View 1 (cartoon, one colour):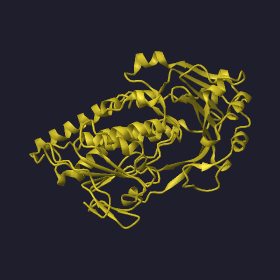
View 2 (view 1 turned 180 degrees about the vertical axis):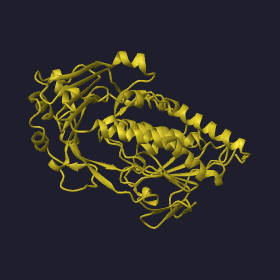
View 3 (view 1 turned 135 degrees about the horizontal axis):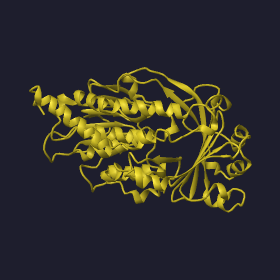
Length: 434
């Protein structure tokens, strides 16, 4: 399967052929796909250009919304390992501190959603997904993860990727989960990224530092609160994670105030002085909170966008997550959509029913199952991120306006129903090859 490159795990037991699945990218989407596909009985190899030996608590936080907190436990993810904070209250303020919305979401959870809405540190989620993907226990053979390997080319027809050193790896299925700057996407489309017009400062603050200060304590209490400050063209999002020990900040602003051109740097260095300058008109209590930022966590992130891809699949290649449908952060659904993608992909590739010559057709089915929902989430995220001003008054903003569509969805059930219908149509037309 390789030319002096990484090798797949062996899996010789069980009914039907076990596919060799190569996943490019070991982020949340790639590891989710590794878990789902090993549970389907396949041999999974995950490659990433990063050094995967580091397991420190670096990076930012992430929302785990009700549409995916029902999926993760079914895969064997131990939610207790995530240090999650529950979203129990939502506070939206104008930039000067005037209250816009104050919602008790704990009551809404029990009335509307069957699964919790959680906030976790991204590193904790990544660590747990990696554990489940590679653990000896659990369904299927453990996935193999290899870091420091940069994919420079993909041949979807041959099922082959080429690494920077010239090695090649052959697979029955290639999953492109390599993010917004995807290299695997080039094998399907040359659609360019473009500036959304916004960038974001990201940083974290020890919650103890916030609650110990009489000026900032009211902004950091109670626990489990998701907070937003909104101006016409910029906003601040704050929420706790890691057992309510840290406050995570995302400070969105016009990218002309921090970038001069399109950037391919996911985490640019910046300074607290820059943050304070860009948000100087916001309420003093919030700026006092900013001054407590942990400098090691302070990064700058340009928010890029892309037009809708006409297709996510070709031959043996399927894209997943941001590689297929980059999502602006205003609906907290980027990671969630990658996890839903992984669930759907594994559904259409069961070991006991998937023949090698069916792979392209089944990958296209995966795309058909996921395409419209991912497209709508992209669209809703753009709408939620629009500037206020004119007829769009700050006081009328509702960040949760699309939550019913976003949250009330079970991708495992949705994909299973679509797959069953596909099998029924095949049977009716006399195609019983699977």
